[in-house]
Length: 309
Image 1 (cartoon, rainbow, N blue to C red):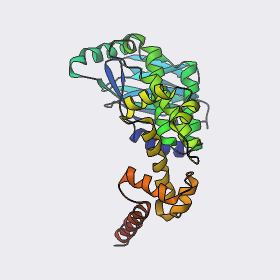
Image 2 (image 1 turned 90 degrees about the horizontal axis):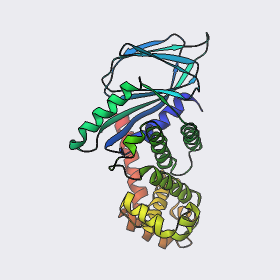
Image 3 (image 1 turned 120 degrees about the vertical axis):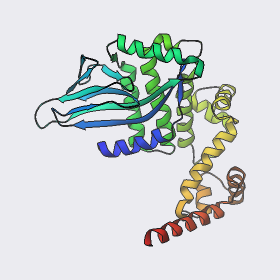
C-alpha cells in the first residue's frame, strides 16, 4: 500500500481509539505510521510523547542520553524513547534507497494519581535497558494483520484495526515489561480486544443476513453467555443490542447521500420487511431512515453554500 495512504488511514484509526491500561499505566496511541527518510537524514528533537521505532528497511541510529542505539531492518529490535528526552535519529542505507520504519507515538500516564510511582519505575526500566527492546514474532505477525485490515477496508475496518492496534501494542508491553503487565491492576484487556476484533469482523461478514446473537457467538468461537459478558463489560449493552447497533451503523453508510433507496438498504441488510427495518433504525437512532437521508442532504447543501460564499 502507498505509504501516504496508509498513514492517512491509520490516523483515522488512532483518532477514534480510547486509552487502554497496561498494569497501573494508561496508554494512548496518538500516531502509528510509516516513516520514509532518505539515507543520512538526521533529526534532533524531543517531544511530549514516547517514541517507538522499528526499522523495516535499511538502518538508523539513535543517540539518547549519550548512548548510541543501532537499529537494522527486521532484526527484531526496536527503540522506545521516553517523553521529554532529547534524542538524535540518523538514518543510513544505500544511495537512492529509503530508510523505512514503523513509528508509534504513545502517551503513557499513571492510571490513577496514586500510581505515579509506577510511571517512574517504567521510565527507569527504559533507561536500564538502554532504550533497546525486542519485537516478538507475534508482534510482527500482528502488524501484518493490522496492515491487511487497513488495506482491505471491509465494513467496520476502523473498529477492527483499532482492536488489532491495541493488541499489537499490548503484545509489545507484555513481552518487554512482564512485571508491569502482571501487576494486580492489570485487567484481561489483550484477550478482550482480540475477541472484540473477531466479533466486529463477523458482524461485518454476516451483515447481509438476519443473524442471531447465538449465531454470531458461534462464529466468534465462544458461547453466547461468554461473549455477552464481554460485550457488556466493554460496551455496556447486551450482545443482541450491540449487533443491531453495528448493523444499523452500516445502514447509515448505505443511506449516506441517498446512495441507496431505503428499501434497497433494507434488502442489503437482510430485512424482508422495509417497515421492520425502519422501526429498528428509529429505535437505535431516534429518527427514520428517510429523515436521516434528508438531514444528510440538507447538511451537504449547507456545506456547498458555505464553500461558495
